Image (cartoon, rainbow over all chains, first blue to last red; front, side, top):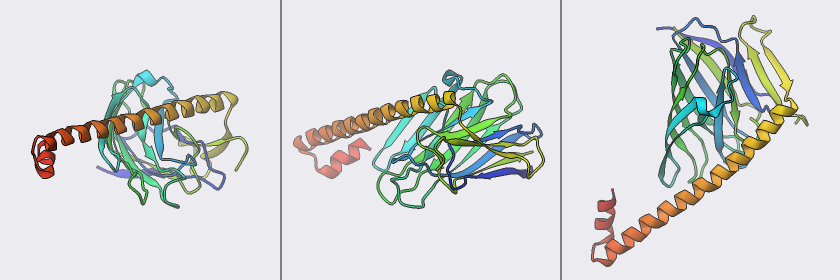
Length: 165
Length: 80
């Protein structure tokens, strides 16, 4: 298998509400996102992904296992969930990091992804997440928008997209 | 920071160097973000309450086991 970097987005000084890849080429078997993000929201906060500009939450399903720093919690529900982003109240200059692999992204039914994500904070409340996402698609994945549930992505936030073929 | 939030769009169908656009959000997109932020805050409060309740329930259970004569280590071992 070969892994090819398609593009890297780095947020500039003004911040950005979202980063969005469009025109994703259908030349691979899997898509890999690697990201390092921080938001202006005071606390770390959910990150979302929107595939093919589909805002319909019920088309997405996530299962989550999360360490909260003081316990463990789980979630299983309809959500466009995509890890969690380090917030402005966390230790200065720290970012969340994560990876997400979408299998068979050129298929036309039931897209699935595995996501690993951690936030950073030199305090108890730093999250560690294992997450699985299913998207009830009807067309190949050609667009992906990544954005925080609140606040905007700060300067130096970075997201890279790789194609695995 | 810009008064109107922006999004960064990278069109991968274009050649490298011509892909990135920085676009101001539309009013509809800003409205959606506002709604999502309110929803996230509601969820955060609910999550914190659930965690606090779970911790309190766990501690109450441990206290009862200790009151029955178990050591704290024995009670903790039973809860693992």
